[in-house]
Image 1 (cartoon, rainbow, N blue to C red):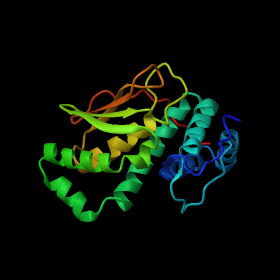
Image 2: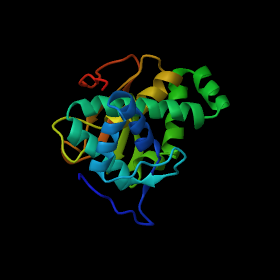
Image 3: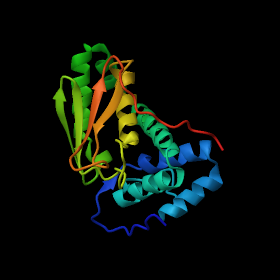
Length: 212
């Protein structure tokens, strides 16, 4: 097994979509049997659909097991999971009036409002890590101690987080927005940094995802 996390009562937690949306992507693209095998490799039980916050060690174990098992294809699968998580947040966590307001504001102001809301709720997706807006020109997010980073990688690999950010900002602020992770704690010392490109720009090269 990649890891069999032992939950402790005071362990930092991450929103369940880090696992639930990943399971959904695996079911659609690899099939239930493969999904169950990857969850067994992670040493993590399949959480119920109505789960609350989950131990960050379990979320990491599932993402890492997927990387180990699927290699390059894991990047595309985690990207799809991040997009699905963004869709869930848009449908269930951002009130309708707030979405309308962000869309009506000039993009620069809408981006600041959305970035502020993300910062306020960052504990739900960074667990024991620390999130902050590092700059606005361009809008840059920084995560120190990202608990979902790969154990090691030769290129930035936090595709789940990048996809969540891209879905939110492309839906509410900049339709052509892309998100590029320009530095990653999986590659070397330092934080994970995500630059938002309002007019589009460099996207991560992801291996094609094949359905099983």
